[in-house]
Structures are given as structure tokens and as C-alpha cells.
Amino acid sequence: MREKPRLRVAAFRPADDRLDSAVELLESLGADPVPDPMLAIEPATAVEDSDTGDGDDSDDQVTPRTDADYVVLTSKTGVELAAAAGWDPGEATVCAIGEATAAALHEAGYGVDIIPAEYSSTGLVETLAGPVAGARVEVARSDHGSAVLTDGLEDAGAYVHETVLYRLVRPPESGESAALAADGDLDAALFTSSLTVEHFLDAAAQRGVREAAIDGLNEATVGAIGEPTREAAEAAGISVDVVPDQADFEALACEAVEAAAPSHHE
Image (cartoon, rainbow, N blue to C red; front, side, top):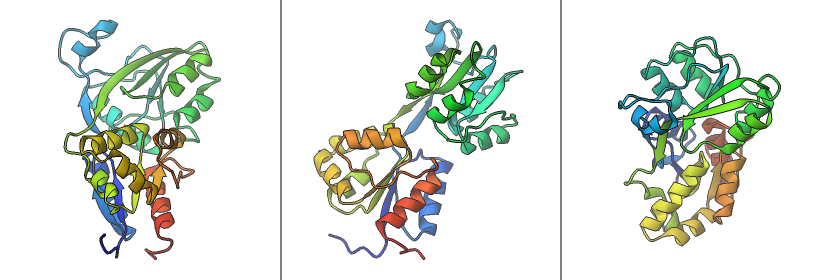
């Protein structure tokens, strides 16, 4: 067992500026980051979408439909891919699931009309439930989007179409954090989606330490960015200690670090 002068905290964000920001934040909180990306982005192409009748036979990047009354973006990645492919929202009302997605839209030169008070699929449904009745709603996101959003909008009377902009896969090299957890050398883990939970467990299983990693997490502090993520973790036998009121990484990291070692960074 190692000496623990600093908290060792795992972050599972994709290996881009989000992981860089996570590492910087954890270091500012006095923790020792374990950057272990559990998600990698594979952009969808039009040829993959051709069976829906929305694409052609090219390998061009898929974009959100342009004939909708409302367009919903749920991630920074989705915005960046849509912008790179030249998407034009036209007269559609543009909706962002939260501030990070809205910031990405602004950065790409798009306007943002609606951001829900609660940054979640449930929050979007509650915000749009009245206005979208009878309207065409385009939901553009990853292949692992929650049915809460699409089902909720349909229940509200919207005509919903979903476009998969990208797939989320597990990087084959992931799993350092699982090995640390299995050895009792991880103090906290920050799960940012149900899929990061699934991929963490897949990585642990690949290394032959799935049960030991779960045991290690249950001796550590586990943070989940929202209720669906908490539910996925707990269904796998992982106890969740922290679910911040605000569904963003900074809140998750700050609350989990504080829970793991109260005021150690002050």
C-alpha cells in the first residue's frame, strides 16, 4: 500500500482539452490526477446514416437536419462536429443541454435560444414540453443518448428525429484507474456518464480485476455527475458518495475531493 500525501483521483474524460482541464482542476484542488480516458470519439459518416434516408453514399460527416423547428445539441463534441461539417441551423430554435454546450455553440458562431435550468435530458424535456407540441424537433448527439430526452419530447407532442453525430467507444489502452482501484491505490473516481461506468468495468474485466476494482471503489470516494450515472454505478455494485446539484465536471470534482479529504486543499 502506498503512502498517501495527496489524493489520487481518476478522471475519465475524452483525451482532448476536457481531460487537460480536468487534470488542471484536480491539481489546483491539491489532488494527484489519474487521467484515464474512458471515451473516444468516432464521427458518424453519411454512408452509415444512408439506411435512414438522410444521407448519401459519401463518407461526409453527418450533420443535424435543417428542416426542424427546434434543434437540440447535447455536447461540445456534437457542436464541434456539426460546425466542422458546415451545419446551418437556419431559422430553427437552437437548444443546448447546458452551459458547456452553449459555450461551444457560441464559440462556433451559432446563437443559442434555450438552455434549461437543469442541465440534463429531464431538464430539457421540462423546458420544452409546452413549446414543442406539434413541432419538429431534431436531436443531434452520440449513439449513447438517453431515451429520456427523445421519449419525453415525443410524449410532449413533438415529432422527434434523432441524428447520431458520433459514436462513443472505449480506448483500448484505458484501465490504469481500474488497476489502481483493485490495488487499493485510488482515492476517488469521477464518473461523468453511465457509459464511463460501463467502460471502466469493461477495462477492469479486460485486466482480470473487475470485482477487485469494484471493491476498491467502494473503499474510495465515488462521484457521479447525475442520477443516471449514479444509477448505472449502483446497479453494478459501486457505492456513489457524491452527486452534485449542478451537473458539471467542476462541481463534481470539487465536491468529490472535499468528500474524500475534507478541507485538505485549503
